[in-house]
Length: 370
Image (cartoon, rainbow, N blue to C red):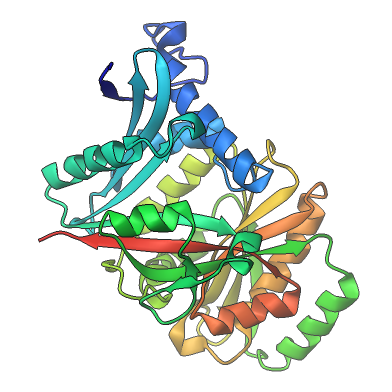
């Protein structure tokens, strides 16, 4: 039998494989596009849409990596036949004992041991870089969770995943533990304006010492230093259960690097934030992303209220402000997707009040080595 060949995928400079210097062959992007096609086929089979999938432009930017994280993508073939792919992400500035692992096998080659081969390969790359804690993620649609005969409970104590799902059995059998479960939720757009107005009136009574500000794409210079501080807190203030993650170090340069990456990816960004009137400092923020190639769906990114400013309904107010702006700016959008840890009951309550409905559950798996 032909042995499985696992090779690194070269990330092209442009979708057609052309480079700025003209030195790349047109077919040099073939492996990248094969991986993208496999991911898209998987998303369509699981969800019926590509809402959760990176666009080709996003994927190119992501897999190039940056000074904060190295990213390695691998493709697997039997002869000329595509079997699957695996990947390894390696934080470079902080959390340098960890690595992110992902494996995907084509439907025709599943349950033949190739997934385990790909997982072992990815793990060996991580171990070779000195990583001792491996993490991975897999989301399961709501209907599969609801009709499951039994759940594997998360170590966080909040939620679980179906024991009879293939991804659960695969991860557990490979020595990964289910540390945390996140709920994905979807909000139908447009939200009735009277509902937004009612929520805003209720919340505003608790936030008289704050004003709302907003920006698109790039944070204003007057706020960017404090914005970086809040983004650093995002890595520590949200529930992470027993995952081996420490604080991320954000500064102005890192914020600007992220903004440039999103712009190159074709992603449009809308941010709303709360300013403390007495100090002039940022107290809370929330981020929405929209992609012209996926116009029906907005992706909710970070939402954070600084610990010293909690209790003033700022989480609700910044989300309301951003939703209003998003509906004006992206009228083609028909829903917003968001993810929250099951134990993050406060943020889940805000989302439920806005009208979000459960859509699926994502397992956050971890394997400690040694």
